[in-house]
Amino acid sequence: MEAKEQSEQKNQKTFIIVAMSTAILLVSPVITLLVLGYFLDKFFHTAPLFLLLGVSIGFISGVMNVFKLLRVTQKVKKQKAKTQLRIK
Image (tube, rainbow, N blue to C red; front, side, top):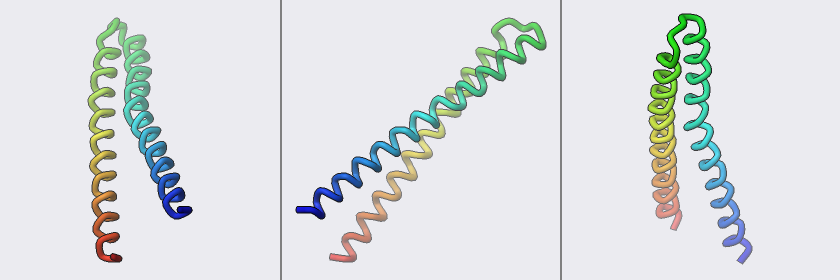
């Protein structure tokens, strides 16, 4: 009974870590490039050009980062499943 509860708690912690990592990986490039675009627009006097470009590139970059994280997470799950099958 305790082993099952510990396994469930470990799965919950893993889920929380992956969810928080996903949020950070998605939002951080958008904010960084948004700020960079804002200052470039101010410097070059090009109203929303670099701002919109920064947000677009940041969003694409964030989505790519999330896909990479999910791919790695799936590989880890498959490896764990294989090792559990070998143990049994």
